[in-house]
Image 1 (cartoon, rainbow, N blue to C red):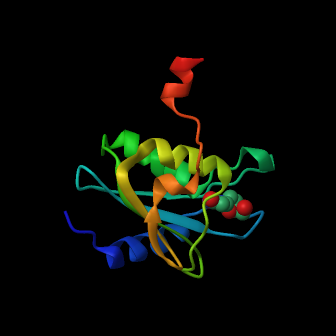
Image 2: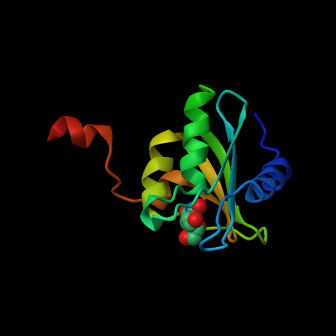
Amino acid sequence: MSTDWELLRRTAREMTSRSYAPYSNFHVGAAALTSEGLIVTGANVENVSYGLTLCAECGLVSDLARQQAGKIVALVVVSGSGDYCSPCGRCRQLLVEHAAVDGIIETPSGPIPIRSLLPGHFDFNRLEGG
Ligand code: THU
């Protein structure tokens, strides 16, 4: 399955216009191709209780589950300017769990493995191992 990066970039950028970010005014959009060949998306949703804010990647992972879309194969996350938005720490943990083994994210220095975003991430084996 080949990745249409232009489509992912355009879709992620479009998603920034669906973002609800009246407090930071920093609009984030995310789009990914999945192992089921589907496109999943997300946008950040802020809250007046600031800490409750949902990042764009949260919405994307939720969309992935909702569509039963499999694993993330290729991912783009951008701010309103269209520039790369580096996923926050919490989102890195979310993304790693739902990424394909060889899933990649586009960065300014080229695509990198999603798994490399969070070395030593907490995973299921650790849960089992105690
Ligand atoms: N944000 C995301 O949507 N994803 C990230 O990985 C980093 C931060 C959002 C949260 C908040 O609405 C805004 O960017 C500013 O922090």
